[in-house]
Length: 72
Image (cartoon, rainbow, N blue to C red; front, side, top):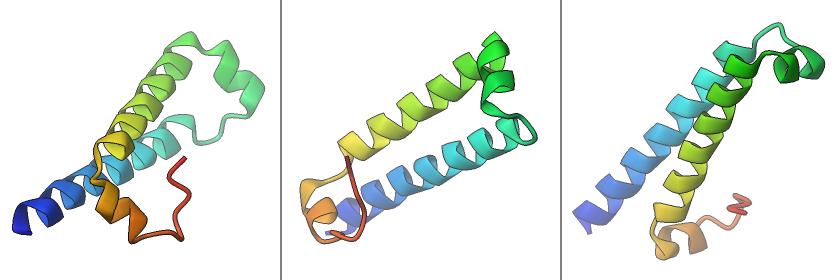
């Protein structure tokens, strides 16, 4: 059970870390400015991919026990 909690906690940490990175990276930009900045856009898409991979790797039991979160 400990490994289950640790793995999910680590994945949640990565999700929060990447979300904060996105927030900081795009602060002050509107959508047009973000899309026009290829480097920021690519880095943001990478962070979203990391988030998606972390969510996908989370234990199904964990996701089922947290139905208040829209996992998809």
